[in-house]
Image (cartoon, rainbow, N blue to C red; front, side):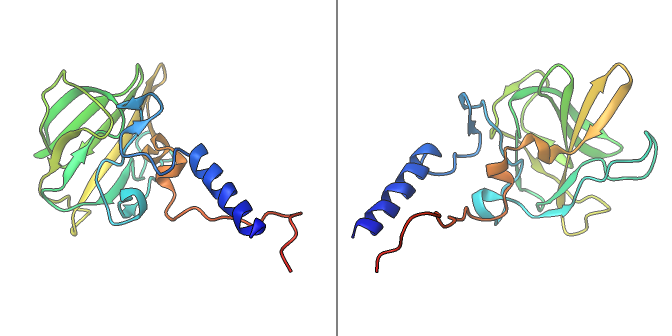
Length: 188
């Protein structure tokens, strides 16, 4: 009985320390709008979408690579702000709908193909709907959202992995696992 109560107490303490459950998308440090969110929902834990293609940084500024992450999402899927920021571009580039958020003095997030639901100049919170996926990209015939992250600096723009915007509890693909506590005698 004491062993069971000890485990119950430890699990309750761990959950209380973690806020009880995983925060809702957009709820993070500082409350709603201060956190981070997946840009599209998926079938995985905590709404984790399927990553169809990961970030592959180019060896040079103009070299081959994949300057973002492709997340499975079909036409009509809701696109949400991954972080709080300001819409600095919402329009078409080469016939494809693009939405760009400035999330700091030097960071910009881009989404495509997207039909914007917010105007340029709008301030958005993490998790807030900013548009919908429209059409398909040539390199993603099953449908995806291309999500990019760009840092501006004195040496020019540098592409970064947008997954790094998300806290680890959101990125983890599976549930938390309890490990055994050593030094505690099991009941006989």
